[in-house]
Length: 283
Image (cartoon, rainbow, N blue to C red; front, side, top):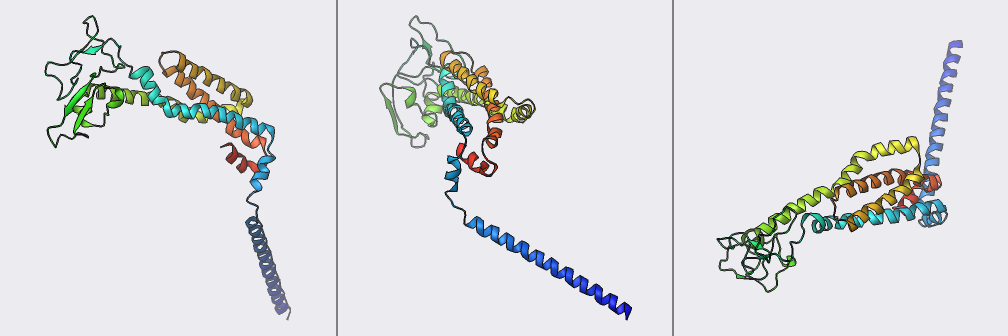
């Protein structure tokens, strides 16, 4: 009887623990359902209230982002064309003209004896990698074959300009101004490589700069110095004709340091529950 009583007592204890566990599990499920229901009733316009409550420091950071990224991103969009005109595909001297100004310069349609460019004194114009070949002053050529691959049947220009030359057209890039299109392609490739400098610096140095900022701090100082460095970079590109390599190295360093301090600073200016809204607003 004593053993039966012990067994019965053990079974009752196990049943009790099972019931308690089921009760706790049920309570947890109810709490989860309540939380989910509460989340489903969140006011979609709550973020507007959160944004209004952001501190003045957050808005100073946002204004800083507008100026810094507003000077970097638009510049990156036009930089390749700017570098072409500034450094790598410069217009030839105005005194240079072709020996046959109304004929092609290079390709299957060029004169067999060539079509060199000369200045007013009869000297051959300089040929440099960053200098545009001289274009014909006028062109009047019609296609006589249907399978030449040209985009148009005829090419008539009384005053030919660089805007008229489409190096995607076989007429220009193979048959008439091959030297010009080849030089343009090389210059475009060089310009693209030079413009990759800021991106490469940012990709390589960002983790190291972030670690340095974590160790030494000075976030506010760095956030102020980076825009100043960008000012000197753009002034150098605008007012001088020197190589763009050094200015673009400066832009890469400024961009990397700025990104390393500005984004970790955002959570420090808002409440923890509004961090996501803050990042969305400043972005």
